[in-house]
Image (cartoon, rainbow, N blue to C red; front, side, top):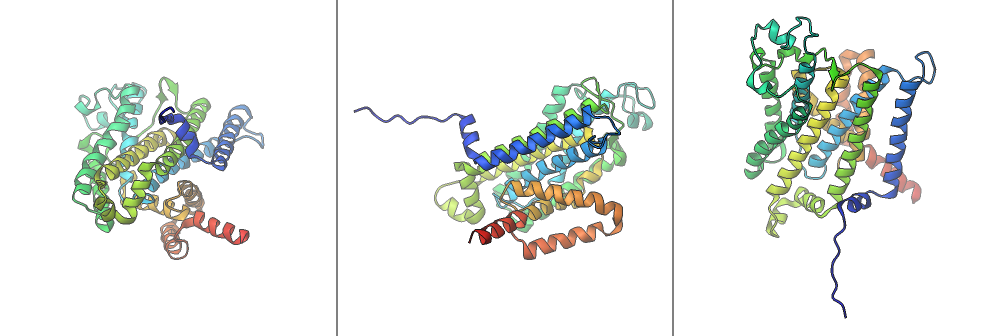
Length: 373
């Protein structure tokens, strides 16, 4: 009689198994849509009715960046019960870290034809600050995109979670954090462009940033990153880690009673969420063409929570729908009725909270269950 030897399933197999068949079908359809849009943008003439314009590619890429942030928020709010009203700071830090590389990439093509960024020349700076060292290297920029927000999240989260700060108190502290960073980055002497931030980018890795090829490349990379974020999120929430995380959300004291320390679980998902936001910010900046301290405003962080609430927290795919729907509505509303957008956003949040606590995904499930019954 041979002894049973447990087999270890590879990470790739577990990643594939974590997503159901209908999920893979949906991801495949999304990938085909992205490929079709990219091909129609590159290979059809501007006058053709099938041509996908620069505007559509840019807006689509921007909203996919927001969708990545929404999934990152869902991981901490929907599955860990941690409501952050300061996630905009991680998004902006990722944008600034990559924006520094883009500013160095301008070279002497700026308005002042100097090796220094234009805003530094305007402020009569003679040399780059020490923290700009290495910012002209692409690999270094990627490392800064990941490490700077991760370090901030790790330190902040360690002290907050160790002190067992939770609920509305945690939300207020995160809001204060992002507001403090916004005020800091507004100051010219910090070396990040003040209220104007970074703009007028020219190239990435030597390629023109406004060329159709680069626009499509950024669009496609953002789509791949969104798909990877969804797959990673699905893998985490269906694993043992995800089950413990959900238990912490529902009854943290009971989890501690049976021998688990919530600190490590909460700190890991919090830091991972911050890094995902930073990656989204790094992809956002070259597509939109600007990053400034307004991205750190508390209102932006509150808006992230609204995307998740509208789509349905604790569902992963719901926040993606929420980000797309709210931002498409914003694109139209801010043109048609710009002065009423914030009132509409507030009303939307109230209505969703009162009548759709599970968001649009929850509504769909109820309708589907009613039809099946």
